[in-house]
Image 1: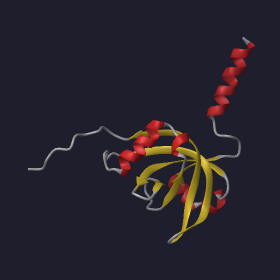
Image 2 (image 1 turned 120 degrees about the vertical axis):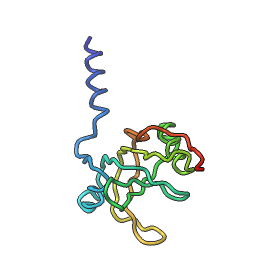
Image 3 (image 1 turned 180 degrees about the horizontal axis):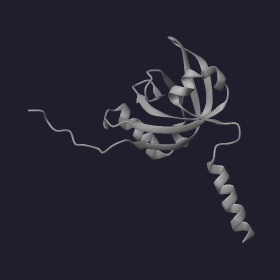
Length: 137
């Protein structure tokens, strides 16, 4: 019985963000970037993907946060969703929550970007019902 209680306790706390982490929407994180610089954060946003970039964008703002992750260490369904967006196979918004270290000013080829080194992907889902493409008459 003690083992079961200990296991349940450990399981509950391993799913929760670690102490000191901040949970934010991507827009709020970008607006207060210096406050979160170098910290582990939990952030939610919509995936914006192209050939060279995977980023999160909050609802109601145009700025993005680049996310960098190891494809081998994320859930397959998450990676498949990102690739569906990259290849334009699914037009629905792809909502994602990730945990990782935030850097507010990372040098990039065309200036500076905000970036999260993803440690864990916590949630992901396409928003809305998938519709089949119908030819326009």
